[in-house]
Image (cartoon, rainbow, N blue to C red; front, side, top):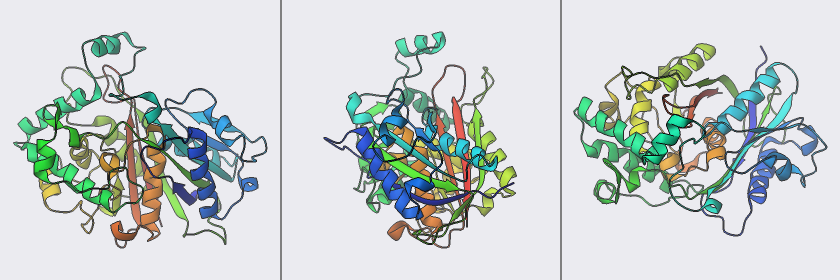
Length: 384
């Protein structure tokens, strides 16, 4: 099996990019990633474009004016896991020796779509019924939050503490949409969205952003800005049909993806030094502590309170600020997570650096379909 490396990466700031079209935003990340990897456009043999809501052949539209010479462009859509899925597919092609150096980028321009929550999938009759009844993702996660408070004898402040931590981390990140710290009282006192989740416990839906990585069988180029980061494991799985006995606190799809990734890499959760995970809502981060094996079942809150997941703790989680602070431009999120972890493994993360990090994990879930946990989940392990 060939070793696969991320040899460079970059992202734009996440936020409202007024007057900037999606192609231009993506091109900024692409050109910076090529420069970071020390490669040129002629070194790239294929391109993977991750996007959810941008329409057909977006990848070709974006790279049309950049001088790539007719190489394959693959457009990847897998809900919020699109970017991570793009890296997964690129890794497969490289392992099969179809290419030796490829580009993966993700792009989303949500501010062009207006406000409001992202709707559930509407081409499934059960989901359509749910949507007509007012079921949206904040409500789904609110049910998990309510159950969590009941099952774990937890308090609303335990959920809100995730937002406090991640907004502090975002204040240190020049790429984050939200750069201001918040207090526990401010989080709990913000407008109620779906009890027990207040506004500051939900990731913002009005955000634009792009991220790109160069992935290669070659360990690095002389002009690269940082040391190469190896892709130790890559797992993408789909959700299983649920029944009335399923526990909504299990995050089964993510636990399954994590088990596959740990097995691929020959690692355990104890080996992980830094994590970027899918904290679309505060309750999600607590559930994923357990699904990823970072904390024992039922111990997410004590694990958080121990300080282990803070910057400077044993395993910082979402030092970028996560989706709650950095933002969640759907197609770009999974790639941006890998750029962030790459920077930590290269000791390039500045004030939010996870000291001595050698193994990093990224996790992305995506897609609301009636009757399953999520449509897709991806876990990657990166190392130096």
